[in-house]
Image (cartoon, rainbow, N blue to C red; front, side):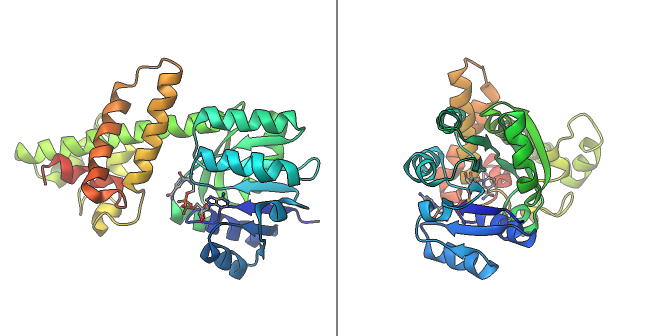
Length: 294
Ligand code: NAD
């Protein structure tokens, strides 16, 4: 018999993820504070619920895709724990701070539930296309139960270790991405001032030791490298505001364990400056324009 999933948080990411669960034969009970989000979920075939508790009651598993740690903590402690049936599995796919993820998972365990943190790599297109990568923190047993549910929404599901380790992997990866994007942008800006044609510099560096994903999969220079948001006026892609959110989570986590992250700190400051220029909604490779002095 197919499993019933309560899905809470059907925004830009959660809407597509819930639709993929439905396509893969799961039943979905949906709840969101937004009527629009709920109407879209209903159109995709989900059962519309009037509250998180109503969605959760009778579900075999609960998936949450919410903005931040405070929303995740209040939804689980306020609604999910009290309404879930014994043995229900909890999967939080939001990007949140490691400390909150561990606190909520500890609270779930204390109530006899299994839970994983399973943040994603990939944006709205990957959520719609079912090609997300999930980084999962939790026990072996919880991971084994979560895997078939996550596989219905993504192309890769990787166990990162115990509770909170999915979030740790996510923010470490995105801190590295933020730092390499800044470095790639400042380098193209400098190369241009030194008289190098950007395509020529790409042809050289993309097969040399300066190569990175930020250069060869997501080049910030329009018209250079494969198609990316820079070719589309820096629309779509991964928003400056979301990169800034992840960098803030990263430097906060670094401080909590005494890790030195000078590159992460610089990337956070630069993305804050870009957001302050009113660019929080455009793609994060827009950093190149600021570093070119535009
Ligand atoms: P979003 O704002 O589009 O969606 C969040 C949804 O949660 C909204 O529909 C909102 O109404 C709902 N919500 C908020 N509080 C709620 C509550 N108490 N009960 C029920 N619903 C509630 O955000 P998104 O872009 O879908 O991102 C969701 C998560 O995924 C975030 O943690 C984000 O950092 C992460 N993420 C986003 C992207 C991306 O490209 N958008 C990529 C990777 C990870």
